[in-house]
Amino acid sequence: MDMKQESQQINPDMLSGRNRRLWHEWHQLEQGLADRRDITFEVLRRNADGLPTAYLIDYHLRSICGVENEADLNEPGVENTPVFATGFQMKIDIPQGYPCVDAPPSLNFLTVDASGNPVAHPWHPNIRYYGAFAGRVCINMADTYTDLLWGVERVASYLRYDTYHAMMEPPFPEDLKVAAWVMRQGEPHDWITFEQ
Image (cartoon, rainbow, N blue to C red):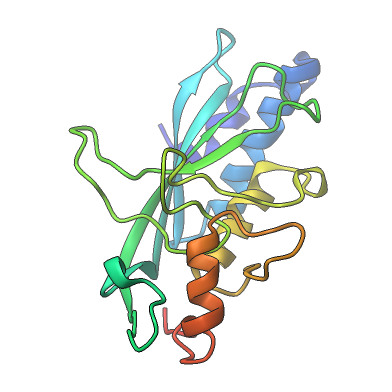
């Protein structure tokens, strides 16, 4: 079955409430990513009516996935040059209460594979790199986007470092250590400007 057209097999006029919104998100992803090679997706989970409630987004983009000399991060006299990877996976989970404002989708990059082995995940001030919440994406203004496609494309701009917030002021970066690296080393050395 052609995944690009799968949502078309369901008549949205027969749906109501949450299911109509789930169909809209699915349809927008199919349409918006149909001709993209840098971003692809697959449905991970469906509700009882066959509508997606979880996605795996594959970013086929080159981005920073860590730094050299990480144990001495941002220490005086230590250069923490970036390490790059090509290819990152992000999971989107849509909670039961979605699309209510208090039930936004969660966006998390995978940090381990199915066997529990670490995998490259983004080094970005708006994506948690360290700790129990590693991989969590902060969109910063959840009430500003209108669909999942907007969020998926926004995260792509994070990976390209076209968009980031590293200053220690509201809305505050998701990862303060990475944000400090961006301000102290990434920007001054122009390491956050790189070819795709």
